[in-house]
Structure formats: C-alpha cells, structure tokens
Figure (cartoon, rainbow, N blue to C red):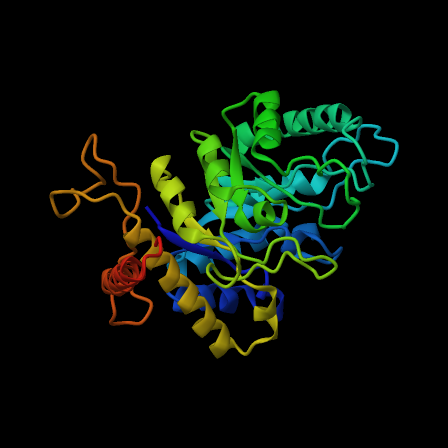
Length: 357
C-alpha cells in the first residue's frame, strides 16, 4: 500500500509536470494526488486540447519513470447550480477528466458537490439542491463504471463568504449532509473524501466526522488552518500542526475506523512562491510529520514484523510507516520514538504539576 501522498496543485503551474512530480518524490512521498482540476480549467489547458489523451499518457509515463504512483486525483469544480436551479447535465470536461484519471492508472477521483452560489438564510432550498446533485452524479455513474473509477465526494465550506450570522450552514459541510448525498446516489461507486481544513472552517468535529463515515471514507485531504477567521481567507492549507486542529484525535479516529487508505496532504498555496529547494524542504517536513503520526497512532501488536502481502488475518494494522526515509538516514520509527519520548515527558510534567495531560 502506498502510504503517504501529497497534492501538487498549489505549485504545479510554476514548473513542468515532471518537475512538480519529482519535487514530491524528492520530499519523500511515495504517491501522488494529481490535480486534473488544475489542468482542465483554462481554455488552453491540456485537458481542453485535441491531444488530451496523449498528454495524459505522457503524465502516466512520467509518474512510472519517477516511481510516484498516482493514487488519487481531483476533478474540476467549475460547474455550479444555475441561479434559477434549472438542471444542467455534467459538462463534457468531466467525462474527459474521468477517462484521464483511468489513463493515469488511478481509481479514486475526488469531486466537490455542485454548489448553489447564493446566500441561503434558511434550509428551504436544500431539498432542491440535494435532488440536483443526486441527479448530476447519477449521470456520471455509467462513466465511473466504464473507466472503473470511484467517485469521492469532498466536504465543502462557505468559500465565497455568502452566509451571514444566523444563516443556515452551507450544504455539504456536515457529516450527515455528505452521507445523505452518498445514500441518495446509491452506488458502491461513490465514497467520501475528508478535507480536514474545510471541516475545521465549518466548525465540525473532525474525529467524529471520521467515525460517522466509517465504511464510506476512502480518501483524505489533510491540512490545517485557524478555523473561521473571517474576513481573512481561511482555507490556508497549512501543514498538520501549523494551525489549530488537534491531530492526535484525528489519527485516533482513523485508527478506530481501520482506515486503510493513503495519508494525503494538501500543501500550502504559498509553495508556489518558493524556490524549488525550499518547496522540497517544506514538503519533506510534512512527509516526516505524516510518518511520525502514522507510527505513533498505529495499533500496537505483540508480534513484530508484517507478513508478506499485508497484515495477518484479524490483526488491527491500519498503519505502517513508509519505507522511504525523507532524510536519507533517519527513520520514521526513530522520529516516532522522539515523539513518544516528548509526549511521555510532557505527561510526567503535567502529573507533577497537578495538571491533566
């Protein structure tokens, strides 16, 4: 299983596709979240051209050569529900995106729910928005079957700051909203993608969201922020630990539901402004953070070692550190040992001072 992954959407347009992928690999990640969304938006984008299939095959060859499998990808989010809520079928770019995902050798394709970009003081329009989305994603199911794609629905947030104090929340921000959409579509081709940053901005309890999605959570967008800090742009996509999310409970919840997918991080937008060497340093730190968290919150086994091909039957083994070291020497297990020692020392200090750790 490819264990730690990074998106490259925040900096891929500042360089070539090959260099962006190599940057992720050099940082120590062993798989990739590929931004098909970025390569489909401008009218002159690769997925808009006549040779888009050839371009996708070239990306696949590059990934194979670098040794960076594409384990998930992100679809475009350019379509919105019209002002009068009349129905419109998925744009043609979505079919191209799904076929391109298959060409890349990737099965997990992440979609945002289609949003109604107007203020909604109450929930009166929610049933129509829900029915609109169910119908829209139903139209994509034959393509998902054709290309062997799993549609991953990502939780969203009020990114246009349309809502006012006292208004109803934006649709598709809560665990229940997203589950109702999955159940409404009613296909095993539809799963969920958790964006921890979006959930934090929306005031959600991220660990409880994870537990509510047991059996439906397939992919992750791990990132941090400071919660709702309007009017400042809040979707900062900070590395885990740089914002105000509590990460131990998040990894505890992933362990509790036996999440066996890829730990994927969505990096900060500011990486685009950094020199390549700085990007690698920043991403390397993020990769090490994921390795440490994964090892630290791994269920403890009495017997050491993994059997070839995975965990033994009945063993709770949701996490294992990536074999690739980010530093070329220090192991994730060694880093986790330091993390455990720091945690243990902190608990001793708290006990001595009478505080609860």
